[in-house]
Image (cartoon, rainbow, N blue to C red; front, side, top):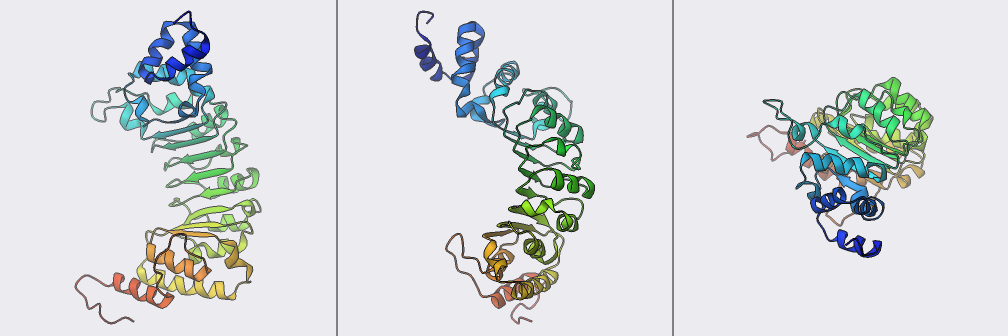
Length: 318
């Protein structure tokens, strides 16, 4: 192969599985150069998930070696439950994959999108990400230890998904005012955030918003955010009767609002399907997928039936 030109070598290497590519990379500086500058610059190797099938056959040594050589060119990285893969939970032994801090120490100078779904993520790690991922546009984290501290260091961030986190109002205010976010998802956040979003001038840039336990299913926010087109609401500790009452107040809010409000929203999502259908009808949205849509009163009856205790009479609506 030493006599072949780079195009031929590149073509041959592309047919090899990753584990064999790494062997060739270790074998010759020329093969390493071809792999690093041509083969591993293709989208398959620049958009990586730690669960990708191509990574599974690798030993821990080869896995680390691959990330050390390719991290600087990666554009998207998805990290899932690293702790369970890196350690034996009973004996604490290292397994076949490195721990979370390994990824955060890498040079991700070209990374645009990062998703870390690991409950051990914390503020210190967010600070490391801010230092090593200067081009980051989209960040997704899910950890109760993330409070929003250090996130303003991600100066180019446009999308922040922080579900099941503990984003504090002080840090949220900084994030909204100092970053140019167009997408914010704080579903199941530990603290109430609606009032902070309403008071922030920076929130007016938001086009997509995810929130839990907001007043009137977030329609108050939608009425105040001039660029909002997608609203995602989630409710987990609200009784069926309270949901029925809030649906009614939401309907009245929309009826009393200026005509432009229903037209701005293009999509409404909710963790309760019946509520989602009702909200879509309230906002006057056309369905994204063809489906039967009961009238608003019929939705209320369905939710009433679902709210009745098991074994009780469900034949007479309120």
